[in-house]
Amino acid sequence: MNMSKKVWAGIITVIILLVPLSIYQFWYVPNYGGDDYYTFVGDSYKEIIVKDTSGNDHREYNYSQKAYDKNGNEKLLKFYSALGRPIKANNYLKITYNQKRDQVISWEKVQKSQVPRDSLEKILK
Image (spheres, rainbow, N blue to C red):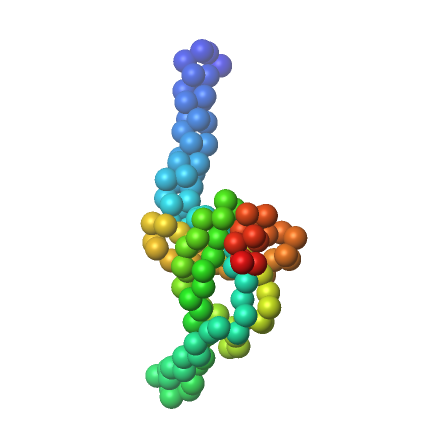
């Protein structure tokens, strides 16, 4: 293999590696990534019942909660549980919020010990 073929093989390899990485970094992260916030969920939800096209009831449980990032900065976040039931009361949640889409992307239950100290201090006030 001569030097020219090696150079072209190297360039093609770099392109093959950079394209997926670029797509991930410049499209996926801004649209589906986000910043983590923490909150404590009580029983402060609003139940909404909607009917589908077949006339069946579906329940959503909407939440509007103060949440705090790892540095204790506050943000009012709105999200819902489509589990068919409310989120179990008296739980800490880690919420991923996407600034670009201005919406909560996901939430998950976490242990109190997993909540950053500055966030926990604000939650407990």
